Structures are given as C-alpha cells and as structure tokens.
Image (cartoon, rainbow, N blue to C red; front, top):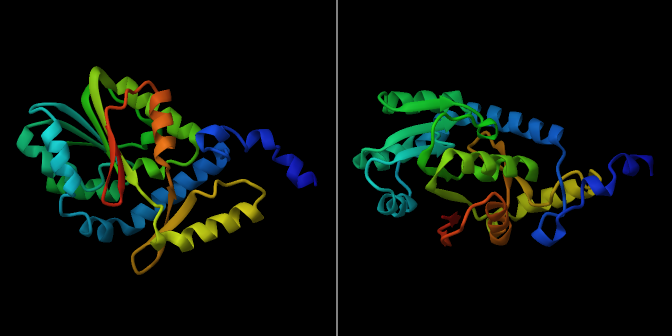
Length: 243
C-alpha cells in the first residue's frame, strides 16, 4: 500500500479526455532519452544503410516547400531529407542527437549545416519558413516534453511558417508483442508507464528503441494546444502526417 501511495494517482492519471491516461515523471523520461541515444549510437551505420532512399512522403514535401525556404529538419539522421530538398536550394539546418548519424550526414553533404542537439533542448537562432520532423517526435518520452518541444518549434517558425510532422502509426498487428510487453509493464510497475509506450527492436542485435504510439486526436490536441492551426492530416503508408 505504501508503494502505491508513493506514486499518487494525481501524478499519473491525467488528461483522460485527451487520451493521456498516464503521465510519465521527468526522471523516467530523461532515462529513456539517454537509452534511446545510446541505441542510435550503436546502430547508426546499419540504420543509415536502411535510410538511403527517399520516402514517398518526400515528394509531398517538395511540392509544398517554396524554393529558397529556410528549413529546419528535426531528427535529421543521415541527412536524407536534404538529399530530396537540395534541388529547391533551401537554407537547410539539420538537428539530431546522434553524433554517429551526423558524421554520416556531414560526409554526404559537407556544405550543409548539421547541429548535434537533443530536440527536447532545442535552441535555434532566427526563424524558419519550414520545420520538418519525420519519424522523430514519437521518440520523445512524456507528455510534458512533447508539449515543450512543440512550444519551441512554434517559436522557431516565422508567423506564416509551416510544420510538417510525421510519426509512425504503430497500431498494427506486427507490433502486438511490443504492446503486450507494454501492458505487462504497466501492471507490474504501478502505473508508472503509459501502455502506449513501446519498445521496438532494430537489427540482428535487437537493439531496443522507445516509441510512443500516438492516436490522431492526441497529436491534434498537442498541436492545437501549442498554437498551431492544422491545415490537414492523413495517413501515408505506416505514418501519421500533420501539416
């Protein structure tokens, strides 16, 4: 009983109407971020080799980004988004917390600006016409950190700027084992995790990576709360996309 009282429900069960039943504490979130960074450092080479070809989503972005735009790419990895945008002569800045992936990006595009920075601690000078975050936001642990990131992104954009945000749509049969483990963790750790916080392994070494399985209305609520006006959203393959 004492263990339960150490984690009062008021700290964990909140925002039920927005789909956020559980609230992760900051120390847990910091630990998950550190583990995720270590995972990407370990898999950087193999991961980059699976991220060489442009996504179909890139064609959609190219059609919407004006030539010469100032673009911020959050979670840029090996820089493959710039490879798709370079014909637009954009003023590009790529941000990632994985130094090994940034080394690959800098070798591929030595003239471009790549910054090693955790996007939850984003600090950018000036304002951008476009901010793009592809398959990175789902790695941010805790509602508080997600709110903070979107607030910083909102501040980094010009008044008429545009955010392109995509996350994996994890509500698929192929991830049922990850969800089963997550539900078990919730039960045995006294509500200290959201059942939608899952770990998905990469490569032969089965290196785990943290993901949050977003629901569309949940993302919509976060974006609206941060001050964004949602123009449209759709599913693109296994991704949820918001503009």
